[in-house]
Image (tube, rainbow, N blue to C red):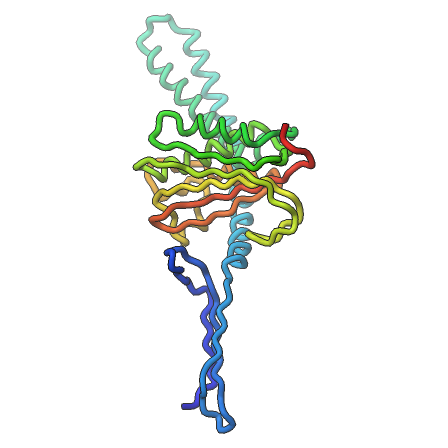
Length: 292
């Protein structure tokens, strides 16, 4: 048998023994004797998951930047229109008697207008972020408070562990509250039967190579649920505005969290296996001080 055609498989999905997945490239070349007959084959398998994540991150950033420009323009114009509507509703209420039959309808119109303005506020936060006022913050109590708020009244709880000597971060407190509230709400909604979210807060030194080469120190918050998981196809869309794999929970939550972390020069890494759960790792640049 003579064969000189190499075997090449790019971005091939490999399932491990624990049912988790990774992406690999496979190349194979035949070994021939002096007469050109095949004697065997050398097969090389390379883990390409890290390179693919970097590529997906670049595509995601580029796509979100375009969406941010669009959302910002729409939100600005929509906010101006809502200001006119709200002003006229308020004037109409002032000009009519308290017992006028249209009063209840104007109350509903005013309520809907306030909700529309809140949506505009969310769009603007996603598009360009709130005005960031960075201070030295202890991240542990922020994560604790966000978990308590987001999971209150649900059948989901959080088990939080924190590394001793955790570094502080330089960040906007309101932004961090919003990020982790959104992340916990997302985890809760992926666990309809309840359960426990595992949370680990730890220092990540400069020089780490996974999930990518780190050129500075970070504080990492790992949030792991045992929910329904996310398919690989949907993992590339999970931070898109209003994308959701479920009826409940679709909106700007994860998109806003991603945008806020990006504006803090951090990033979010994602690993998920359908049917087993999802792990988000949020990396936030550390300050040079230890939490008080």
